[in-house]
Image 1: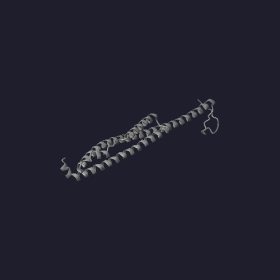
Image 2: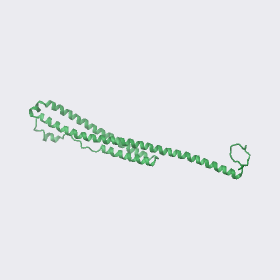
Image 3: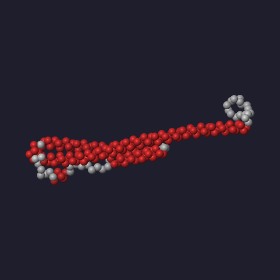
Image 4: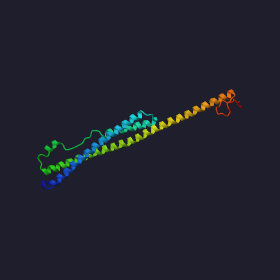
Length: 201
């Protein structure tokens, strides 16, 4: 663009610079929000790991849940890692633009801000993908944890009932065997009216 064209477009260039600057600010806020959400996800995953270690759970499902939570923590930490956020530094403002006119400075500064915005946008997309991956894996791990605890609880209750039934059956069998050996009925059913009755067979 020729210098005379820059002079005629000074107001437009100022407007473009203001808009790009505002978008850079919103972009930085979005990056900070992803970092905050990543901290929450990592905290939840670590709390879920601590909770699962204190509960009786089915071993295979528990191991899968641990792996899912560990992966969620990894993706969460990766999404809130230190980012190379680019912005216009103060030194180039003096070194590069001090000798330029106002329209030329606005044009060069706007072009630099657009490059920084595109670079930061790539960083934002990568952080967002890692956060969504962490969230998805965390949901899978939570489902595995709940299932592991439920399966273990069901097995424990079912095994306890079966054991009680078997114990009652063994006691009844021992009582019947003792009655046969003695030749008299010892069942407290009341059918014998309290009288000893010889058992045939």
